[in-house]
Amino acid sequence: MSMSHPENPGQTACETGQQTAVSNGTIVTLTAAVAVAIGLSFGAVTQDDAFISFRYAENLVAGHGLVFNPGEWVEGYTNLLWTLLIAGVLALGGDPVIATTIMGLLCLMGVVVATWRLGNEDWLGRAAIIGAPILIAADAQLILESVEGLETALFALLVTLGTRSALIGQRRGGGLWFVLACLTRPEGVLIWGMLQSGLLVRAWRSKQLATQAARALKQSIPIILCLIALTVWRLHTYGDPLPNTFYAKTGGLAIPRGLTYLWTHISSHPVLWSLATTGAWLSRAQKRTIPLVVTVVLYLSYVVVVGGDFKPTGRFIIPVLPLLAVLAQGAIAAITASKYRAALLILLGISIAWTGVSRLEDAQGHAQERHANLVARKLVGDWIAANTPADTVIAIHSAGVIPYYSNRRTIDMWGLTNRTIARTEVTTMGSGMAGHEKTNPAYVFSLKPDLYLPEHRVFTLKAWDLEIASSFPEEFVDHYQSRSIQIDGRFLNLWVRTSKPNEP
Image (cartoon, rainbow, N blue to C red; front, side, top):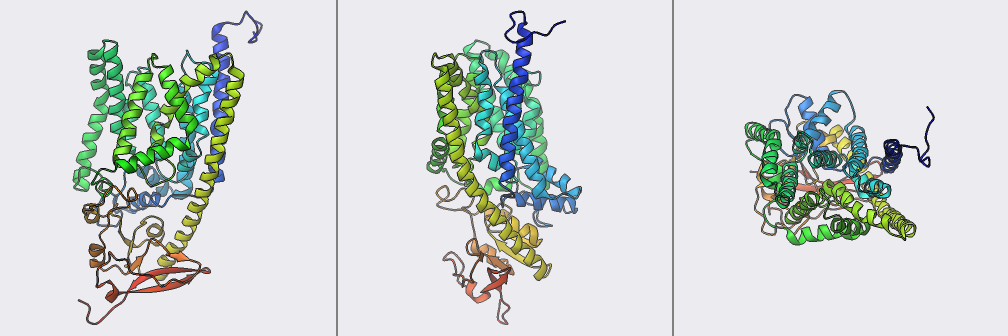
């Protein structure tokens, strides 16, 4: 049997489709590989917060349970599945920094491929089908977030896979993917509910509301059972129905900050947002558009209400980036149908490349800062481990790298792992840095920590005589002295508790 070529009129539609699919798959794979290469070029840039999960995982492997400090049962993480995966790595003797970098890059590749699968629709042209994964792979902020040791890329992958399953009507409709998503991030259940809301809106318009409602209820059973089991376990283990981080980061509306957060992402991704909004309108008659639009709009509204995030990677928006990229395909399909197709596609490619390079420069600068921060804080943690008694207690705001490497009992002064601080009332809640607003110095220093490491000027090129923060209790100066200790040509500046005969 002779082989047919694409230009051969005797070639079947099936053969043509198969060859196109292979070609598209190759392009998407190469695109994902480029994104991974960029991620590797950033080097070791693990975020401080990731080390909180590392410490929980380490204590679990050591037999202390999922705790930050042995004996203190507080759920100071919001990524249970990710933390358990890290525990597996530690149990096998692996390095969590290296392991989470590799895991994040694998998830990044998965997000690129899953975006392609989510947007692989018959009515789209080839340029539109590969356009969505290219938009994702060109996002330097997503790439950087993937190698910072956190669960963001895994969560985005699970949400994308679950969304695809629900939209194409698979038997379980994405429920099992969203079970994993709920175990990875609490927002998983919100996105599932938002997606089902979109499907119900579509069903209402097509007069199939009752059928879709029954299907949604059936598909939600595994998620409901998972949430019940997870809540019972939380109450039994930690005594709270929600992670302690929820209480530490909430307490007031932060809509102005959230709007700024959203606008920052829009203004830094003009091509993606322009294509997504235009594509959503142009493809409004397509079956998948309403559920995607409803999910994105509701989720972004949630991000605005909670005030966004402090990181410059757009972390809270990343879970719906694939959905935005798929909506953008409608605009790309319109471009390919234009008589000016070639010129418009060239212009689009230049625009994607230009914004991608711009974001890459920003990401590289942030990566350098993260790397320097990681190296410096590891030096401090290693010094504390080698030069202080094992029963030393430290107080610190950024309770990640230094506590992990020092292996000392730690008071987390932002309250992520401390129940009392997490429930402290803050009158200005919602106006400060997201996730860094609750603190309680009077309570912290009543616990008499041996060392207090300030957030600023903790490790510098010259010795600093530290100043006392205005929020500290008046008696702080009676019990602590500022010290500067030289380490590898730099200075560790910290407060050391001093013993006094008349100390109460």
